[in-house]
Length: 185
Image 1 (spheres, helix red, strand yellow):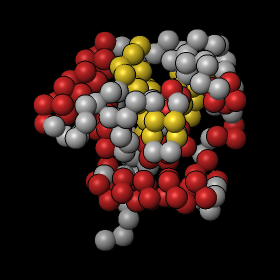
Image 2 (cartoon, helix red, strand yellow; image 1 turned 90 degrees about the vertical axis):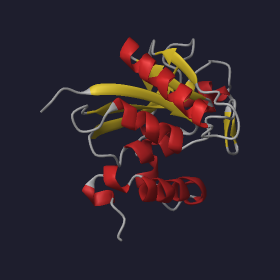
Image 3 (tube, rainbow, N blue to C red; image 1 turned 45 degrees about the horizontal axis):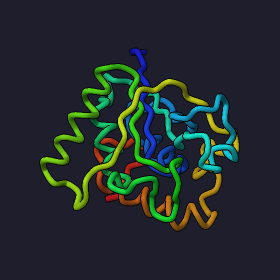
Image 4 (cartoon, helix red, strand yellow; image 1 turned 45 degrees about the vertical axis):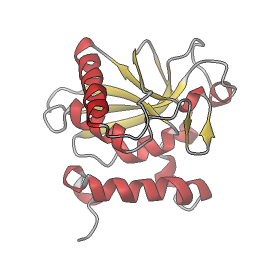
């Protein structure tokens, strides 16, 4: 087995992020959690107060021989709105901000480069507000949040928000999906 790397992304609700990244070839695991705040070991309730400074994030462990960090960045930017400050859809607060937490200078440089490229291409109508910050600490979310979509596909939020996002993601990223996730032709 080749070495693993980690990538940590905040793109709104971590239930959505976990569902998306889990379907990619080369992704070994996705853990929803919290990063970027000041309080050690925050709970979901703490983060929801908008007082801890944490973002809901997905920490992705991946095989760089099977999927690149660049590919993960492209998925990140294509599956949320990086132009809205502290919000994704109806979810509002700093915990829903668009943020890339880098583990090393190589990741920072790649994140900065893709933001520059997307800006130059005018890929989005509004300016990208995605924060790029060092990962100081990652705190896994409570067990209740793990594999939320897989365990609760009929819940209203899953039906209204996650399922349509996954359908769009699967159609666009078909070539990068794990075999079990490829939609029928």
